[in-house]
Image (cartoon, rainbow, N blue to C red; front, side):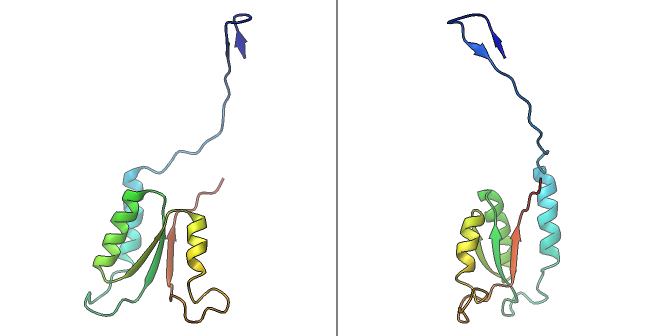
Amino acid sequence: MYSAGPGEGSTFAFYITAYTAESAEERRESLTRVLSNMQLEDPDEKPVYTVLIVEDNVVNQKVLSKQLQKNGYVVHVANHGKEALEFLQTTRHYKDNEDGIDLTVVLMDVVST
């Protein structure tokens, strides 16, 4: 902390440990790898997967959603973890909800510290 004196204001400094975010190109490559593993052999056949995308970046949501839908998948999107948990309550995987959505795959970024 530095202060020039009363009435002059103060300067504060601090340091935090932070991780470098994945670049847009690295994220795009990751999504491409996931998509290549989920390609349908015949795009006209019934969707094999129902996908929940949990992603806070709207651009990434749209790109991934369109690519999956183009390949015949049913896609749902959640903006964050709380929305994802709320959506999971509508699936057949939630207790006593056998008639719920048949969710197959959840795609999400997980950041650990």
